[in-house]
Amino acid sequence: MRAAWLLGAALLASCATTGGSAAARPASGLPDFELDTVDGQRVRLSDTVGTGVVVLAFWATWCEPCKAELPQLEQIAQRHQAQGLKIIGIAMDDATTVAQVAPFVRRSHFSFPVLLDTAGVAANRYNSNKSAPFTVVIDRAGTIAQERSGYEPGEEVALEQKLVELLGAGAPTVSP
Image 1 (spheres, rainbow, N blue to C red):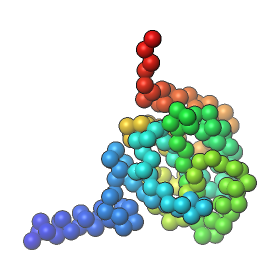
Image 2: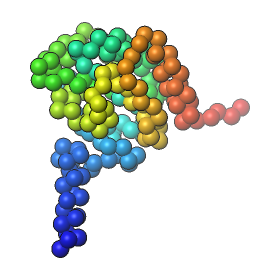
Image 3: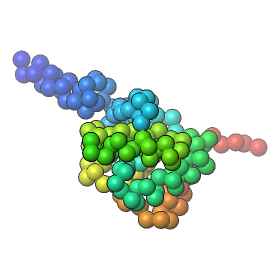
Image 4: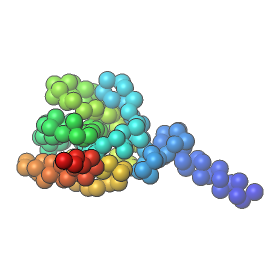
């Protein structure tokens, strides 16, 4: 009887971590989440992890350093998407400011998806302090390679160097 209760509790905990889905973690073991983009598309982290180097960029419209960092991330994305870089913007705006997210994203012409995390689903898993901006870098193997809170102009240089290192680590070698 106790074993059945424990199994039931484990299943409920598993479902709670993904908003109802029984698949709580991608193959890498990282906590999964599924959110809508500003255009209404569903994006699941587990569909992206393992396909390249992934950057989760947590931000909000009320955060000026975030708005300064995002164009830098766009430039990095443009330079390295062919090598397997995938950037995912995650807007942490709540009900009072979420209406400002889509217009900002459209004006900025980001090539990467921007997800709406009004309920804190992704933030609770990867940015529990709700820092903005907050960057999580996930390597090709699905391991968190770096976390960074805040942004000062020029910090994108070190981030790009780390990304280039990670992108090169999984690149096939060419022999003469």
